[in-house]
Image (tube, rainbow, N blue to C red; front, side):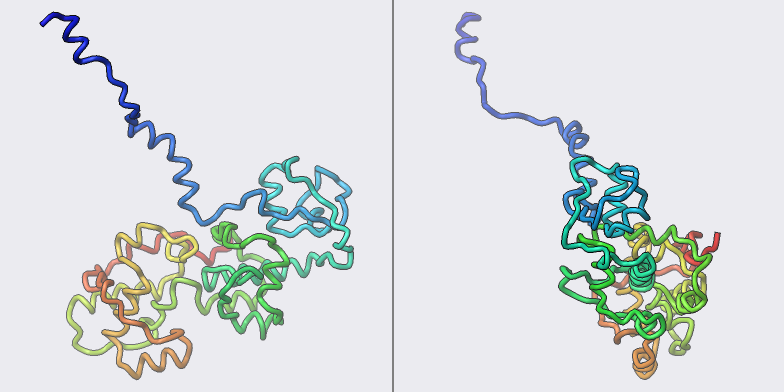
Length: 305
């Protein structure tokens, strides 16, 4: 068969199919995947730039000056962080009269209200668009007199869903200058440590097997050490899940195994636990836990410097 005949038979088919370069595609998609994987992040379109009047400093307005003309705190932070985009200019809202602009003191109280929730419950209070409302701590209502509905405090400083505003900012707050009442309350516990609490308050059953005794020793160590941001759920080190599994579910199972029923009932009654733990059959990591503390790190929550 001649060369030409071979070419005529084989031809040059166009299958209309594109084969991708997997490595190059991964590079192209990396930034999209990183963004898509996050629960946080506020789109500039989501914020409100409504103000009662244009700030005297105009486009050079500071955060305080924006608050003084009625812009909400978190919205203003996002707007300033975005570089005061001309695509989202400040808009005078004729319905926002000066008497409706909250004082800086009221804004400060709302910020603390939100901060307290994040520190002690690792979640934002409910805004007006949030379907479920978390329990409001008595400290906020009874001691600090913040007895309005939680939506009031969120909506005062934020026009978008607050969960989009990365809660990791709580990690960088300094306690110096805080009121003594608040500092004393923080000392009673922060988010991420409630299920460790029983291990520093109650004696466990006698004659536990070695693996459970080791797990108890680990839990007791964490319970008696200063709390850290590596364990706090808002900033938790992701390696903890690999090393120890789901902390709350494993600790719940451990509590059910090593404490007496009447002890657990007392824990719930005294609010050491919100409720009796539910057995979690798939969370058995605690049965192989080592006794050493490999999760706390040194980023202490109660720092003053």
